[in-house]
Length: 134
Image (cartoon, rainbow, N blue to C red):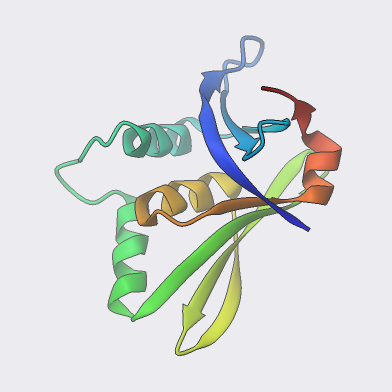
């Protein structure tokens, strides 16, 4: 089952100094921390803050390519967690056909923010890595 999530925020892990994106379910019952790279966190932060860059970033380029190909992103899903690595899928509609494309969660989230599509997490991922939160 897929649970709709929202972005609660970005923070830095005090031990590893790595950025963490915090997703929260719509009811505020559980949060899902996902460690991401510095560049991906920057791309997410720029979009959260509505900062425009003078030239398209990689996620902007991908958004433009998808639009120019007349495809549509319907949603992204944090789909799995294996050996402490999160996996995501980007669900695209192309010529009426739905396809799922493998992606890193950080890239999928950065793209979802730019296109304003929902972010989901599989309940199995929340069971493994989610924590109670408000």
